[in-house]
Figure 1 (cartoon, one colour):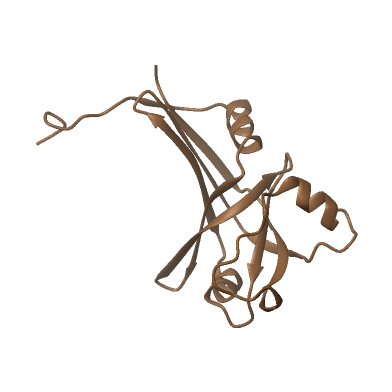
Figure 2: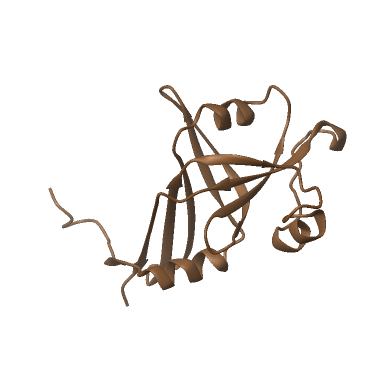
Length: 149
């Protein structure tokens, strides 16, 4: 069958500098977690600090998000942009996610976090039900692709 009747474009890998440029300029992505044979993915706000991806998450007690964060050994973050068929890119960051805790005046105080991240999105929860927590995705693998042309 092949690609005789399918439209396609060529892509190529991105070098480390191009991948870092994309991560530095990106505020959002999709974080994929796993527990056994079940997957869970959700949109996240992110900040690349040059060594790791920082994630600010609103985590509720007894939530699916919290349970999957605890059970995932290797998470995958997907960041991408699709301008059109000649201008698109994607970056995948894989590695363990560890909790840094709430912004509390340490290296990542509330002011620094508010500057680095877009506003926290709340979906149907009460503000008092959420505890904003910082997590770090420590890259064991980073790959990037972009369209050619």
